[in-house]
Image 1 (cartoon, rainbow, N blue to C red):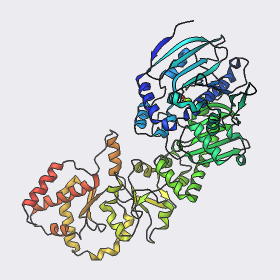
Image 2 (cartoon, rainbow, N blue to C red):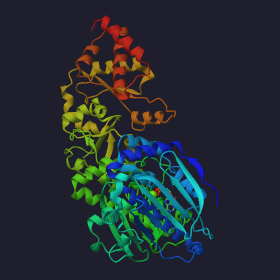
Image 3 (cartoon, rainbow, N blue to C red):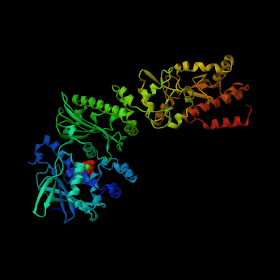
Image 4 (cartoon, rainbow, N blue to C red):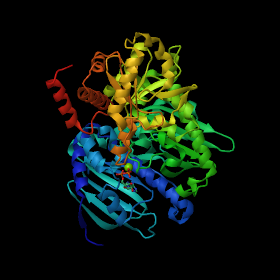
Amino acid sequence: MEKKEKYIFKSEVKQLLHLMIHSLYSNKEIFLRELISNASDAIDKLRFKAISSPELYQNNTNFGINISIDKKDNTLTISDNGIGMNRQEIIENLGTIAKSGTKEFIDLIEKKDHQLIGQFGVGFYSSFIVSSKVIVRSRSATTHKEIGVQWESSGNGEYTVKEIIKKETGTEIVLFLKSEEKEFLDTWKIRNIVNKYSDHISVPVKIFNYDEKKKIGTWDQINKAQALWTLKKNNITEKEYKEFYKHITHDFNDPLIWSHNHVEGNNEYTSLLYIPEKANWDIWNRENKHGLKLYVKRVYIMDNTEHFLPNYLRFVRGLIDSNNLPLNVSREILQDNRIAHNLRQALTKRILQMLESLAKNDDKKYKIFWNQFGLVLKEGPAEDTVNKITISNLLRFSSIKTNSPEQTLSLNDYVKNMIPEQEKIYYITSDSYLSANSSPHLEFFRKKGIDVLLLSDRIDEWMMNYLTEFQEKKFQSISKIDKSLNKLIKEDKNKENCSEISSEIFIKKVKEILKDQVKDVHFTHRLIDTPAVVLTDVNEMTTQMAKLFSAAGQKVPQIKYIFEINPNHILVKKIMSIKNDILLYDWIQLLLEQALLIEKGNLDNPNQFINRINKLLINQEV
Ligand code: ADP
Ligand code: MG
């Protein structure tokens, strides 16, 4: 037999172990959930591989997980007869953190966000929370000799690996409990934890029970060992649904809502879909796969099957068990498989229905949902034209009237509150809620009592390209020219107190001064406290869109704005009376610079702007 070989953990594992042991201590019992979950995964993997290579069973189809306690040695042992690991696999799987995102994980742990630990695939290392030493003995199901590998570590930077004799395939994990963790040597304690977390995994979990009096030991099954989703809805309690969610997602939080359905007919399947309460840490990482667990006729096939959900519903967790897909299905096959395609459509509808009824029946929970996943759902109108109406109904916004950055207004409510003369749904996009809410474009709407949606998420501008109509009302950006507003404006026009002739001359002068700096110039009656604004033309890119493009490093053509001046503003009235052309030039340029600053939040040449203000302040002729 070969000697032990010593290895050093990758540095991130060291850091992780240290942080984890300290920060997860209050939740230490989860180590058992993690180890049972790994054992159950290992059995699932073996069953799946054996579909094409039955020899892997090695005459063993009686699958299960066994737990035994040794009070003399202070050890707790968890063993399974799953797929097992060979030497190379054990080094890869237990010596590194195979998954990406370690850095994000460490950041989260440092921030004490323990909720997310299991999502990172660090499950196995949680054994060190309660153990001073861990020994893993494993034999791969592909090995037909009685040879296995032993991995051993005290969790302080090193581990050793050596070859051993192992009669059975599968994995055995021996935890040498720290002296202060003896409570885990109590059979009832272990039973309780298994009941709590692992009742509905599909293989039996047994514990060895030794009767001191009778001097005999028995293996007692402590879980139901019936895959939860195969049971009838009526026979499953709310608590069981919640624990099952935690088992498949490793989430510490309860799910927000779920939907469990058996569907019969040509396409027979069972789905169990959960909407979490908290977003997964990598929801914005597009490289990571999101999706459902796939089973075919109760056999586990794969995790994170993205084919059954559109991207904008990637926050949904859960599983699908199909009776019609072939057992040898692969990601490639799913890509253009008709059954998979139909399933995706059906599940999409189902999830949207779940959300619709949540929005209707439970304001509080819908708010939680929207705050966590609203940004993801906003990808919907672009991605899914078929369900655009349903998605539109689910969107929530800030507006002048809600007067809060929290997005709570539905389009339905917006339309209900439209004033009689109003034809369109008005919105404004900006960098932040604050800048949207203080835009001078809103002045007119505020005065008229017309509500305006205040959009300030990065995705909003893009979403609005796809959201063109709701209940036959068109969406209209108020920073764009909009002729239909004229109807609403007309009645105010009388108040204007300069004659038509002089205004015509003034506008002509302004046009001469600004030449091709702007696309057009006119008076507006949409402003109250602001002397001038710029608007974009109907077909022109909006300022916000141009900002997004340039932030993404793309070249954007210079926007030519339409310059609108408020003839009722006292400053404009004064400017209109200026006779000196040089002075007038500076004042008009200043008005434009002000308007551009408000619209864009910056100027191409701030220095010129400051110089101009200073010049005008010194020369106080106006
Ligand atoms: P995860 O389960 O999320 O992948 P873990 O840290 O829990 O992360 O486990 C790391 C890896 O170690 C697993 O992906 C698996 O390949 C391997 N492993 C752990 N436990 C077992 C086991 N009982 N049988 C076979 N492989 C295992
Ligand atoms: Mg695991």
